[in-house]
Length: 402
Image 1 (cartoon, rainbow, N blue to C red):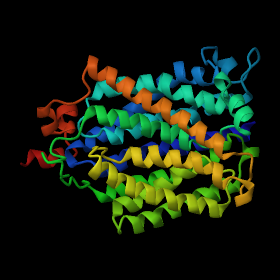
Image 2 (image 1 turned 120 degrees about the vertical axis):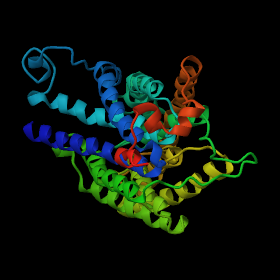
Image 3 (image 1 turned 45 degrees about the horizontal axis):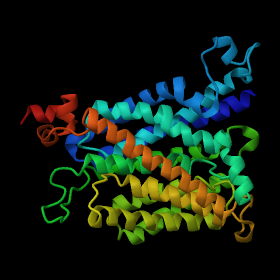
Image 4 (image 1 turned 180 degrees about the horizontal axis):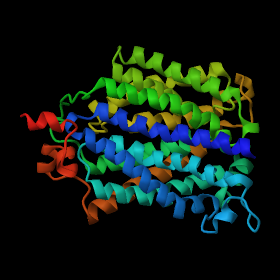
């Protein structure tokens, strides 16, 4: 059991480190006046998520409460907890997944969202919304998986969260972004987009690298026990990542933002089927996801005129959806996969997940908008979130010399 404790704790630390990737990806993408806000949001959202998940969310999803003595929850006599605190580090691992939801949302609503209403949204989403579908998909709550297997021939398969984490986060974010509205000056009166380039490609790239490295903990350690670990998951994650990079390079015409996000698109899409698809199938999934991200990002920004700053709906929402569905294609034995999946089950399960997320996004943020307001005032948006909310910029010494 000690080896399993260490195994999943290593995965938890790797996924925890991914939150630095979320932070620096946002820091590099937003304008300079919102960099401090990006760093603070990600860190505080992680803290709030952990508390909400500890007291409510984890119990909702898995029916497990840690409100017992330390002796019991660490595996001592008188309880049903695994020895050596395994259930505690399992919570740590899954809490890092739960906290990824507000980290995803953060990138979409950047530069114009109020701080505390977003923190309220984080508490509600991690305590109730995310655990609802998490419990259905990963714990069979409400008879969901029994129904899927009886109706469509297989349970809904999402090994590491293409849908449970990424698509859910991306589709919640879509509602938040639409209700929040576009940044001032993002579009002219005739609807023509105005370019707001990333503040720092180096920070953006660093964020993508941190996320990409940590993702191997996200996927491989989703086995949760050492005896379940598979090199196939690592290989598939690698090939999906490089497939996303190469297709985003071509589709995005060498744009560095697309290239670095292309890696993430491939990794998002492979999560669901990383344990069942053939490596060639994983490469194909990555290639498709990288191209979908580029085209969907441009369509969202330029045609739909939705100011999703980091493109979290195309990246997480659409590529996560794609990953859930394609698991039911490339996971089939006929295409070299491990089998045990069906296209119908993957399609329906994915649609259930994104429907819950979309409804929740509009409901949670719509309620907060009506009660508290969710957008900075025009004056504060002009000043920038750093000064308006945190009273300091990312370069205070330079500001003193102005």
